[in-house]
Length: 295
Image (cartoon, rainbow, N blue to C red; front, side):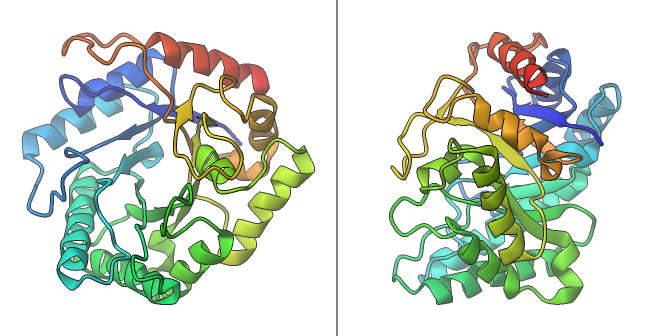
């Protein structure tokens, strides 16, 4: 069993360049956007030449398509009771799944959004309805995975029970195409203390597995600028936040961290890299060295 480390690398020059930069850092997983994440992108498709370029580039690396995660747009609120906004979010997520399926990647992850009317049971149903719609509209093997949230405001998906409630509404015939993933910064910000002990960290993962019936489909490995329970989604380099490095050693030692994408969403040093420069970001090299030292 293997640890598949990766990062959300800078995509200057195109998503194929993001793959080349990840490969240059010795990574075997990758996260990308297929469209600008601050827009709904509900009418955005992906050009055939872009698909071909990405697939061919990925094939030249050690990154398997199944270990590539696409992060959906941040603005999609699939939990909203506002019908017009919900339809746009539903259609945006469906179009994201279509673009990602064309690329042949393993999964799309998305933030479920906020229950702005405080009806959390209704919000769980609306999120599930979005997933069901997307999976019915787009056939293929790319999975649609709920990401746990940092818990700010009325956001859904901060607890095992909420993630479990969302997935409980998915028909059994579609369950293999969906699931969830865990962001370590979001866990800590939501009040789950990853720093207490290896046993306590395992219990947190147990709680999510028990509530959903399955292990996570990915991890986002991020340290936290915000304090425990702060609900602040502020990522730091591993070891430079309030989680520290030992918690990541405990996570990596857990069997649930094996054979799935382990994605760094930590800061990059060179956001203004040239379009044709495929060199690894210095921070990514630093993080990869740290992660290997924790195994």
